[in-house]
Length: 190
Image 1: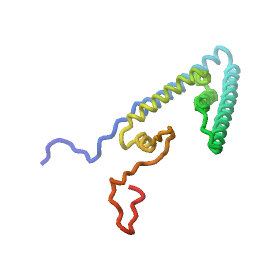
Image 2 (image 1 turned 180 degrees about the vertical axis):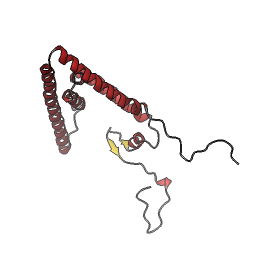
Image 3 (image 1 turned 30 degrees about the horizontal axis):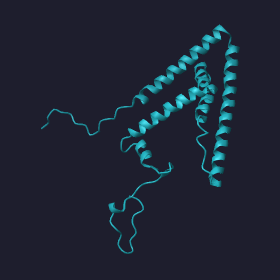
Image 4 (image 1 turned 45 degrees about the vertical axis):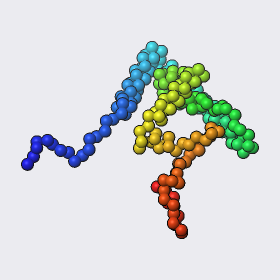
């Protein structure tokens, strides 16, 4: 006897996130816009001028990435030397290197829009604003993390010490597990 209601042995497929839905469309629109803009500039000026613009963007992007990489490596070396000598590390002098490298990478990508965005990311005020926005967004996403997601696992792995240091680990309370019998060892993992 059938009730007329179709049953499926497969569970309902979860909805795609908006990012996974619109990111490919956004990338395709960006590529089309870049190509259209390059052809418009080539028609107005010349193909050689467009080539010079793209070559200059590539060279400038390489210089920016090299400079930001050297600065990041110098900051890392100084931090490691301070830690070895027992001196407390000074503030966050390495902020902005990631956004500077991103700006250099955008300059190296052929296209005028990516060059404009890359040049904007080289301005310190824009770097600060984008960095604050990214930090707030990451903090909000971490607070909204649902149990069982990657964000939840990352949040659980961070234990804050009173002095501000972050120590990766997991808290295991002794009252949660039975005491071992003589000769038995407690399990290493749960």
